[in-house]
Image (tube, rainbow, N blue to C red; front, top):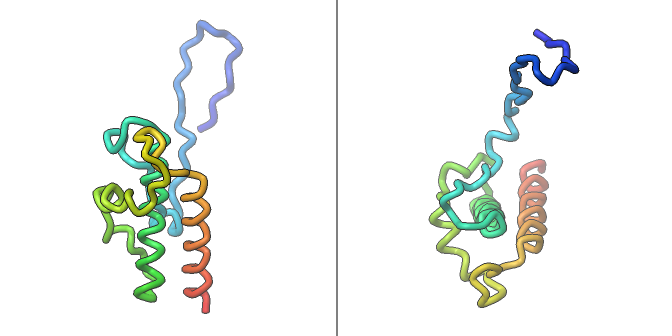
Length: 116
């Protein structure tokens, strides 16, 4: 049911969720990391990219075209961090944009291999 927007700021209106159900492809997408994984969003985003890299590397190595997300944990991303570390600064230990680019490239390779 659609609700007509009200211009009356004092009127009681309820918020209806605009969430869209995840499709099949999203089911294997690495979710946002839990907030308690790291103190900043920058670090959490870096760990998410690292997990994406680990999953794509495993898919390429095993020649698997099935979703491997369930085979990996956030602890594995934390353990792999030294491999991706570019700085001794604990607040900025890696370059998140570079990690995203690497993850995107590896995932594209997986898609290409699996399309063959």
